[in-house]
Image (cartoon, rainbow, N blue to C red; front, side, top):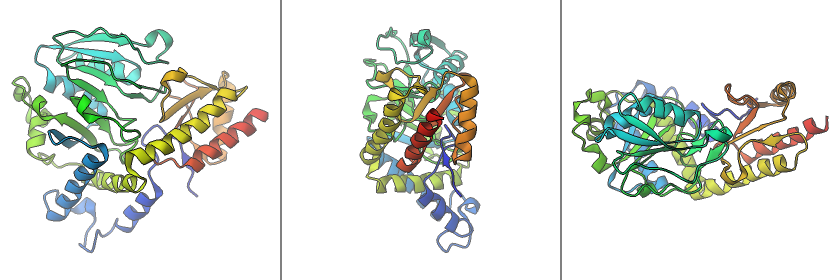
Length: 355
């Protein structure tokens, strides 16, 4: 029996996608082999690869002067590849809104002068800063659009002028509509809203590929090399890209990003409304900046939190522990989490509160 999986990632996948992948596991479309066995340069795989890119472009309305890359190494590798490829003046501004933004800034400092343009650390990253100090000669400004640990998200983007805006969208991509043209570069690990772990999406404006400094990097770390080779410079994570294609097809059937955004807003409202009226459970993030995807909360008592996690698991509601550095509880309700899962969670929380 399948459980309702509230893991922050790798995360729940649509059942329809898993069922289709199961049917095609041994043999894909009468070709005599699995997708995992195909040459990444074969016509049949290239059809999958190109379709995945076309779907992502359609769903996100990605302008034609942006390149879409399928890379590996997760967001952690992008923490390094971004400064390596975008460094010109040797300086970048980072907005620190949580653990992953901090890690991205720390990694960047190996390659350039990473300055803090704003931080919400003073209130344990429970909000998004609205006042920023940007350097006129910064190579880029980096933000983390949705914060998985503390459950916050940007409602408005900082005005960076002519400085390229870079965003780690790992836990928020495809959950709500965005204007890609406002960004210089977007990156996202796939294992939350796009597919399984193994593939990382990079969307980069073409002019940012031209960088003399980046041309001196090892080829495997150059965005331009990957763009020129259609993400086939080395063997890509073919099966992860195939599953991503299935997930993107599923998302299109849900009404695309506008359709799933309405569902996501309804799921989040159900859980937040309960938290706001509960006498036991309390939300952690500032109400104004609440995430649609990651909802941290607590009873305020470690023992009760542990009892809740145990009881929830017995009821088929799993992976509700908060991140190890903050503790407490957290429900990650990505695109593939059905409304029924959130409804069952709220029902269990009501029962637990009464007990």
